[in-house]
Structure formats: C-alpha cells, structure tokens
Length: 536
Image 1 (tube, rainbow, N blue to C red):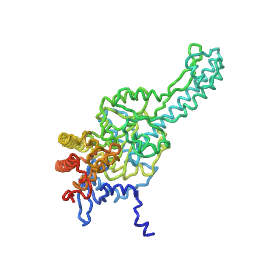
Image 2: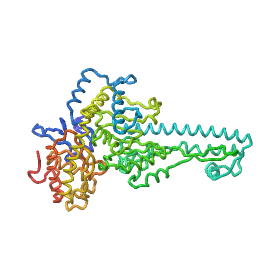
Image 3: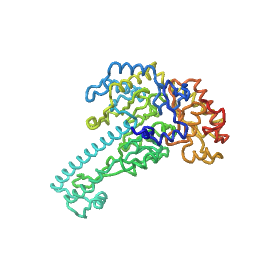
Image 4: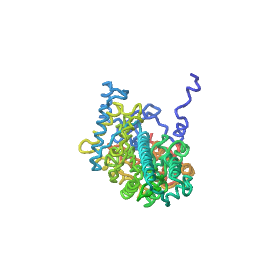
C-alpha cells in the first residue's frame, strides 16, 4: 500500500478532525456500567463517567454482565445468525413479552404484531412503509367502491333516473372538464379524469415541530432539523411539521391537506355527484419525549388532543420509543405516562441490552396488513443472536416486579433535583432543566454575546454544546454531549446503575463548568487553559 495513503484517516476524516478540534477525539478501549475507559500516553487506564449512554442504548449499563454472559453462551453454542426464511421462536417470544407489557401499561387486550429491524431509523421506516401500504390498500378499496357505485348509477339511469345538478357536480365540472348538461357517460369520464391524480398523489406525514426520527431516506423526512432534512427533501414522502402545543394547530394542518374524490350516488330516483374524503395522511409520528430537540416531554393534554384529532381523521399514530422506551422514563413505554397508545410503536437502542443491534416495529392488530410481511424484509433482522439478547433484556427490565423502572424513576429524580439545584445557583447560565426519569436535559442560556470571544464564537456557529462537552471531558473526565437539534442542551442518559457517588461527581464537574461560564473564562475551554485544570 502507498505509505501516504496508509497514513491517511479515511474513516469519516472530516468528523475526526472536528472531534479533535473540540477535544473529543478519545479512543475508548473498555466499558463497564456507566464508565468508559481510555489509555493515556503512558498507557495508564483513565476512567470517564459516561452520561451519553449510547444516546439511550445502555439502560442496563455498558457490558452488563448478565447480557455479556448470555451473549457468550449464545455464540459458544453456535447460534445461527443467518437462518433467514425459517422458524424463529425467539422472535415470537420477544413479541409475546412486549405484548404483555403493552397489556399492563395500556390496559388493552388488542395484540400487536412485530416486524423486526436493526436500528431505530429502520424501525421508523418500517412503520412509515406499513402505514403507506395500509393507505394504498384503503385507496384501492375506495376506488373499487367508486367503480361499484358507477355501475349502480348506470343501472339507475337505464331505469329512468335523472342526473341531478349540485355543488359537487359544479366542482367536478371544473376539475374534470365536464360540460353543463353532459350525459352520464361524460360525467363518469370526468370523474375518472379528476380522481386519477388525486388517488395517485403521494402521501403526507405529520410530525411535531422538533421531531427527530433518524437520518435514513424516509425517516430523515420526519426529522425537523432542516440541516439534516433539506438536502434530501426530494427523495421521499414529505412531512408537515405541526406546532402541536397550539390547541388548533393539528386540526388546521389536517384540514389543509385534506383531499376528496368524486363518486356517484343514487338518491331518491336521481343520480347525484358526491365527494368522498380519501386518506391523504399516512401517519402522525411523534416521540413522547423529544430527544434531539432538547429532551422535551409531551404533556397529557397535548397527547390527548393529538389522539382525538387523529382518530377523527382516521390517521394512525406512530409512537417512536427508540430513545425514550425500555424503562428509561420509569415505565417500559414513555407514552404510557401520557395514556397514548400508538397504532405503531418503535423500539431499538436499549432493546439490544447495550450489546446487540436490535429493533422492532409493533403494529396494532386492527391495522396490521399481513401481506406486508411479503414485501418487506431485512437480512440481519430477527436473527437468533440479537433477538435472543432482546428477550433477555426485557426479562431483566421486568425482573423483581419491574425494579429497573423504579430505579430509573428514583435515580432520575435524584439527578433532576441536583440539576435544578444548580439552576438555582447559576440562574444566569442555566436556562432550564427538563426530562423524565433517566432522560434529562440541561439547557444553557444563549452565549453568542459572551464577553469571551472563545465562548461567543462557538455559540454563534452552533458548537457551544460541544465546546462544553470537550471541557467536561478534558477537565472533569465526564462524557456528556449536546442534543443534535438543540445544541445548547446537554443530555444526560445514564443507566439504572448510576450511583449517588456518581451523581455527586457529576455535580462537582457541572459546577466547575458553570463557574467558568458564569465568569466568562473562555481560556479555560482551550486545551492550553490555566495550569492545574486538567484532570489527567
């Protein structure tokens, strides 16, 4: 190999350079519970307290011994990873266990079918695909009904029924090029001309402002941040983002995208042109706790308003529990706190126990289309290793009467109290503390007008959160990162094993950071800052 090429960093080199400039280019070599370890220049192992938790993937901690032991057992036993198109009893076991949780937390007996995936974004895309598959099927049923009604209208006309004029007829005349007084056959031709583009129009998805659902071709369309979405906006179905906390916003948005088709009805010895609504919206997609928007928790009133509006319009709701689910908020499903039962529910991240890549899309039985199983598949989804790990993860969360959920609530409450105490102490720096359970956000006031050019410059470029992250890592051996679309908010998503001593250590490090920000000491954020600051 060319020596010059061999020395180049070819694995996402731009990102590597950015990490280096922010002081975040650390190679971690070992992980345990809420600690990551790297080796310094002398070979000494350095522990770093990890509050990122794989963006919510390690509810049971890094390298959970029971999960790791089970993974070794599976691999030592030669469990097949590639046994596609065969029986997968472990997949059914996982589906049954999760359904048991759904019954308990939502008080329903309706089963959910499970479609397996490898990541959260893929699980969201499965929900999008199935919702569109269902919408297309409903459109086909509607078109079939119109064809039947047309034949009934022809029969009625042959028996002497007259074609009546009305408002719908006049709208058809404009849309389908039907002349006044046209015979029935021309009206029918006009109906087909007007309906064809309406039936073939692409779907619309709805999502709250601030949403984040992944960065794949479909899921990125549901991600509100234009920096992630706009370059790819022409590749997939479009999304309308709704200010859902405004009482009438969702109803107005649904009305704005409403579409109709023309039909014929035999009424009182007359044939009339009528209009029928068609399913234009494939689904409404939401996170019960918006992670990348800055850890923003939905309230029950807003959730109920969404449920009612979508039910009235026949729009299915996709609840994205990829980051908020698996016990992180003190219940298996964060949406259960809101009483919001999704037609689709997506799970990933912690489903793999911090070891495997596993995801699943759950589809309410009354909406499930079994034919979807023949048009969607994924090579690595539903394999024996990852799915069995997911089964064990659910078992561990459910053990001892759901002790993990109680720990998440208790540890989260302790962390939130500590953060609010810092907010009271540093009110000029800390803007807000938000979240539920072990999914918390610490938001800082805008620093773009800071007296320190170091602080102000990074704030203006949207990198303040990463500047703070680099300082916390370098000076206090704390690993905390900002949320993707609210970079002035640091996320805290530790495991249920997070201890009081670690909470105290976190508090000390954050207090040091807040002191530096309050004092506008930009030099402290530089690697060559004041002597004695570095923890290493």
